[in-house]
Length: 326
Image 1 (cartoon, helix red, strand yellow):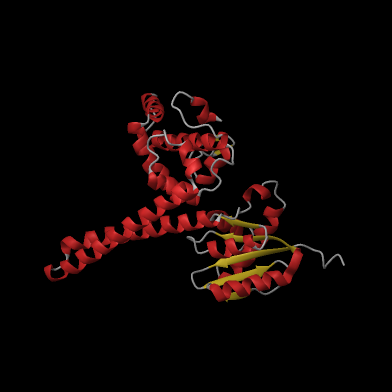
Image 2: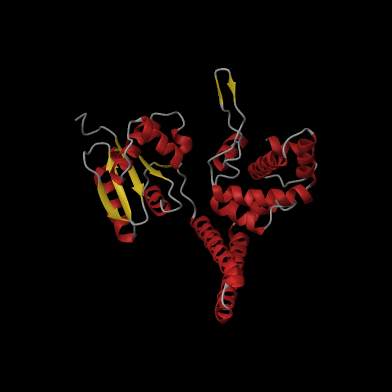
């Protein structure tokens, strides 16, 4: 009776072609294709374990993990997606020096058991995104891909034989049309589904449509967490590196790269056009901070301002610095 009620922890190693699944209660892992049919089989397999499933852990794999994570969340399972660095460090600590899909899946299952006992478990749980957030994020990701393709084709144009330049220009024109259409789609989504939140940020300079689309699609936690939590989630919080007598420089790492990139561009603009951020940046530089460090601090401040404004429901006004520390 006791054995039947023992919790089961699941680790899923996600690759482009496969989903390798390990259960803490089973000696062998299972594998399915990373497609719709394979995902349906995975859900049926996990459902067969029943209520014993305590936690499912996946490693972030460039977005490849998102369909499986979202589907498991939708079925009511507790799901955590961890940073690859954390997963690899845990595997090494457990003595898993070799690396295969099967070993990685079992290591994630062991990691799931550890995280389940942590007091941070609930904070780490994946919150299922709303359908409109998923659609907006897909638009943002596709736009980024097309912009990358546009840059690559532009770089080829100068060195390409004259006979092929017409082809490249045709591709560039098609890419530009697609990017323009995606911008229109993103604008429509922002207006239809995120108008209330964006109205609160209307007076904050530097936060343009591109940044808004990334924030609304890729950061649904905005306005729900404390300033410390949201900064760590995005990866702009300075982290201590102290041990014994060693006092290391504070650094930022991890977090959501797409949100960080959008914040970087927004901060570059805000440093020039938003008085609150410009004054903060100039004060740091005058105090001797390197410009790069000062800009990262501006990213942190801009994020915490937006988080506090949305959390409070009070529209941003430059005369209210308390928004930055709420």
